[in-house]
Length: 412
Length: 68
Ligand code: HEM
Ligand code: SF4
Image: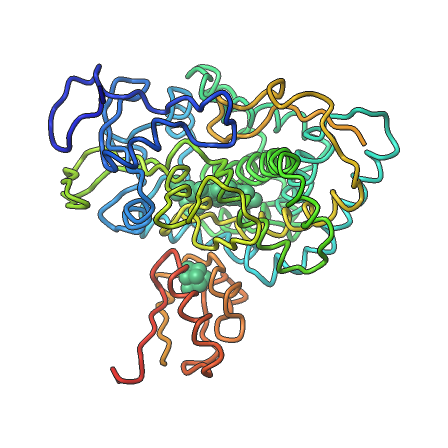
């Protein structure tokens, strides 16, 4: 019955499960049921991708964590067997190379150029400004007509305003960069569409960084411009980094805001507990559990083995593609008892929603503060917040490299 | 307990500072870890162990006194 190859065998690829797998229609918050089966039966097994390649898919928490931290595992997307997420994603990676898809020492050299801005202290100092952004958007939302789409009214503007401020990108251009980002993180985007969207964003950032070369402004794009001036980065490399920060900085957190709200509305008792608490620890812990439970970066961390790696009874050969399925790893009962239950008291700090190893999310301190402020404010200010449609009418981003909802119609 | 860090491995994730701010800080210029005390008091031992476990870059170790 099982179509999953035993470790090490060369089953014809047509018999392998296609990855990514569909979620069960009735459980939009849960990872695909096939991944759960794999985790129980073939925790390191092969699957078939869009382009016919058959990389390993790793589904247990301990294995995913160990491999993400293993120096024999490479994130270099130029490797011929790198398991790309889609044709569009392959094109974007080719055209816009960033440290996200490089190994150390190059990765470390480039990442360290921008880490200062995301330290705990620097981000904590932004909390009042983020609170003000959230308060103002909620004022506006309450003064406007209802029902309203929470994605457009709050979820997208909060992280977009914040990352624009940090980078020095004019927020007035948000329609432009949001629509191009959206194209890039959709798995159905074609090569041609990805090439054009990448080109538009890179041109745009080259222009902004070019301006900063002449007129430094104390923002992240100015930091990048300084590196260009010092000959440490080409203008193109700086623009690629700026684009990575701009796209990663708003699309992810936006999805956590809208999808997190939807998940909380399905758990009214826990939502009430969260609403009634003013303990920052309770709110911080709720953020960690929602990150784990929703694992919106749900398309697996993509890697290639540089050497033979023996793990959990399997040998991954040098040069083979590997997908570390952090979504199902975050639902591994061995790491999180009762994993399919949303439990805001769990405080699962060891989750893999931000990845693990040297590529663990650079923006995680910022994402945490943004989510703490939103979850700690929205439901108190609008205690009667409800959906205006049934759960099965909500358009989920099944085709997204980042999961979420396209729209969240709410009223109060 | 004695704490050891490797600044070369650190990726500035901030996980340690979130977990044990009395023991770990980050450099102003690049967010890389700095150790505030090598020998944290008994009350912080659990937090330090958690920080070492959460560090994504394996840049923090804990040595028990007996090993020294
Ligand atoms: C809830 C929100 C977020 C989630 C769930 C998330 C998730 C992730 C994950 C899973 C990775 C690891 C990629 C890999 O291992 O292949 C990552 C990396 C990254 N994230 Fe985030 N992220 C979020 C917010 C942000 C924000 C706000 C920024 C801000 C600028 C950001 C910037 C980055 C960058 C630059 C990397 C690449 C790091 C590297 O390769 O060294 N992310 N993120
Ligand atoms: S947890 Fe590790 S990688 Fe993150 S700042 Fe601390 S030492 Fe550096």
